Length: 225
Ligand code: 5RP
Image 1 (tube, rainbow, N blue to C red):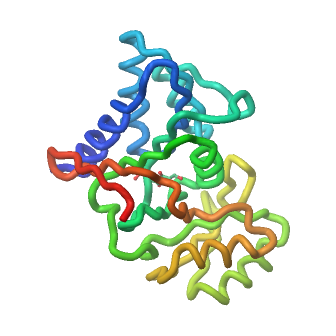
Image 2 (image 1 turned 180 degrees about the vertical axis):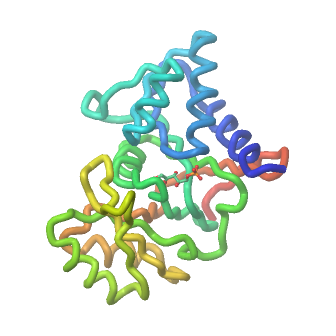
C-alpha cells in the first residue's frame, strides 16, 4: 500500500467531519492537498464552508479547488482545523513545519475549536525528535538565537533554499533542530519560546484532539493518551 494512498484515506476521513456553515482551517502539505481536493468535491455538491489557509501554498491550492477562501483577519474563531504532521506521539503532541508553515499552522489551529490531524501511519512515533524540529526565528539576530538553541540541541541547521536562507510566508528563517529524541516536549516548548527571537516552534503540545492515520486500506482514529 502506498504512503500516498494512506495519506489520501486519512485526509478524506477528516473531511467527513466538515458540516455546512463551518469555518475550516486548512493545513499545508501533501496530505492536506488530498483534503483540499476532497473538500472541493463536497463544495461542488453543495456544501457551504469557508476556508482559512495556513500558507500561501494552501491559499492557491484551495482557490484552485473552488473553495471559498477567507483571510485570517476576517475571523475570530474557527470550527475545525485539519492539518498534517511530520511526527506525532501517543499524546498527540506533534512536530510540524516540514513545509515551513508552522507559524500560521499553529496560530490557526489554536484559534479553532478543534484540530484534527491526518497522516500516514509512519508519522506515529514513540518519542518525538527523529524528525528535525523546525523553529521559526526572526532573521535579525538569527545567529545569536541559533547559538542559544545550540545549548539545548546537538545540531542546529539554518534551512536553505536555492543557496539562500529559506524564507517562510511570514518572512522568518527556519532553524531545523536535530534533537534525536525529545524527552520532554512540553518543557522543551517552554525553553525554546523563552529565547528572544524565536517566533514559533513546530512543537504542537496537546493542540490536536484527534488524528486519522492511514494504515493500508484502513483509517485508524487516534485520541490523545
Ligand atoms: C507543513 C507541515 C506539514 O503538515 C507536514 O510537513 C506534513 O506534510 P505532508 O502531509 O506532506 O507529509 O507541517 O509545515
